[in-house]
Image 1 (spheres, rainbow, N blue to C red):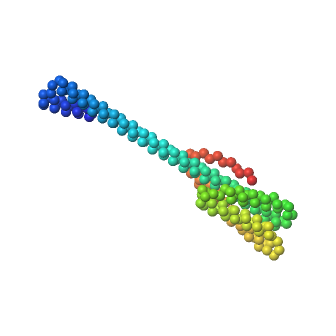
Image 2: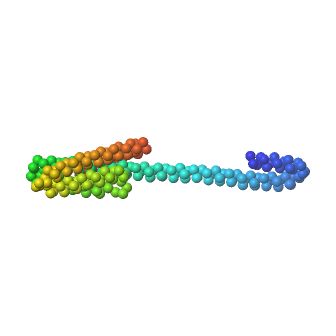
Image 3: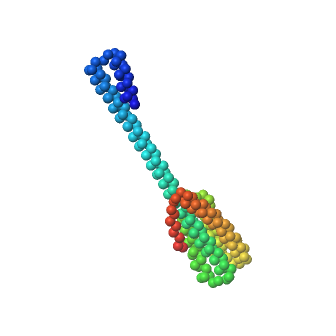
Length: 206
């Protein structure tokens, strides 16, 4: 379009000033050079825009991928916390039941050992990257396990009933904490499904 405009202007100007053939040749050559430069500039500009759009698309893709990976990792972390917390609560409840029924001490050892193991795994799963609400719930379960383990270790005498009641209440409270963890897990799994993120869930073996 620019070249056509220049040629039209040249024709009008040439007729007005009575240009000779040699002058016409020079002008045509000059216009051709200008047109070539303009064409190269336009092509370069279009390629630059194309490259910029491609880079922007790549950055968005990489950012989305990083966000998805982070969400998947946080979801799996909460899932693991739920499993371990449930296992710990179950062991704590069984330990209390064993003591209430008057079972021999050696019968309690497996539940005591399982509580210790579960609490260690639970604490190891807690990290600064853990979802804030999930972190609080997991810490509450960990404290419950520590309290029950301590109370049942010192059970006896006049405080027997008091310690049993306190531990039973602690286990009941821990169930509420796990319910909150489960709600968080459900919401995060739903979000993963909405974003098309596949979550590979492996159950903890404790």
